[in-house]
Length: 141
Image (cartoon, rainbow, N blue to C red; front, top):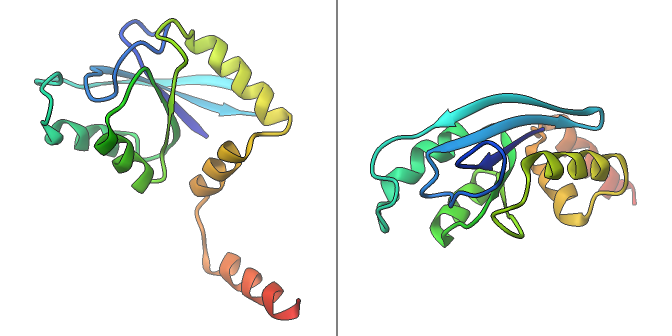
């Protein structure tokens, strides 16, 4: 799964989602994590009420499952959730990206909490066979 981090320095989760000019993206699985890319955004990102600044970020994160932020506004969080991207608020702006990645890999190898299992399920593409199997099981029960 792809996981994104709003950051000012590529070390800590220290940027507000709406104001972030950089978002680092990693590929994470049970074997570890790999840096994928840094997404960069320009323009007047600090302007409150400027909803137009959110759309490019949401589009750029379309294939991410999680995005870690230091803070996020309600409309931005709603947009991410509507696009099956789960925002996760860092405990502090000092939260180290590498530490979070290590804990995330450990969690994936153990028993992920319900919110993470739900996020992982949302990131999986659904197809007709999935719906058919569920329907068939419901009928047989």
